[in-house]
Image (cartoon, rainbow, N blue to C red; front, side, top):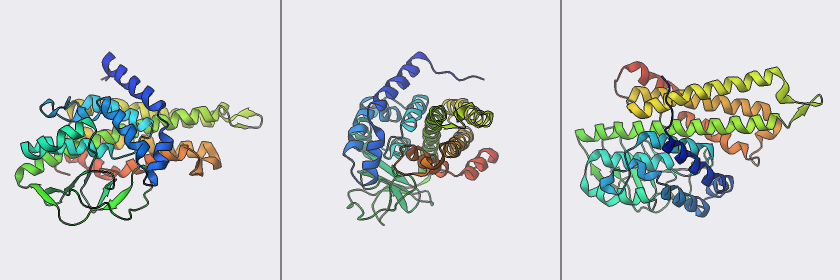
Length: 328
């Protein structure tokens, strides 16, 4: 079965690509990694104006969604341009609040998330991505309870993560509990499904960018007086990456239509493994320059590695596919 974008979706992707191409995202990522969010928040506002975050928020709360297919389209472009910030976590928080069907927190928080006025982070563990910039902080406990940790001082020092566009901060104890009980388990599953779908889309975009950058580079780098892109072995490596990415695309779009845990897990592991393969190939074919943090390629290399395990390792996603619907 072929999953193709309709004209409106293609135009949406093209508009995001055009906007992000002009935004100099590598500079925004480097500033973000040092705790300077000025460029990143300005870019966040433009992404919100394009309606990306509103796609995860129902119309009742001033959103446009939920529209998972369009979310997937948008996150491919966000990954292609290595946009910094808790993008996945913000739409995950929106899904969580919506699924709880609690007019109190939802009415208070969702409109600001849809408009980009607020930034959210969500964690299921002890560390929250970009908690220093997020003003909506949600923690999901393993016991099926979740709470809002709000208005606590930004941590003085976070971890130095692999992906500089995804800074991790310890989550303090306590916080305001918003909901507990059986309904939380269902809401959590929907939120984690959204997290995996958007992570898969972001990874696909990262892989596509790495492939494009590598193809361009092998046309310029020469050995024995000819471009290395003319070597058959190099062509084979790039063809393998292209096939892996193109195989992941219909799985992603199909999962966005069904939104079942198994389909989304399959899309996540396939897209993330394809992006990781693209990263390894890009590193090998770029040679020594690919290892330098100053070279922009590193921003996509590290993101591919980080996304591979974010919101579910490859083994965890495969287990979900094989479980036939059992809980994660």
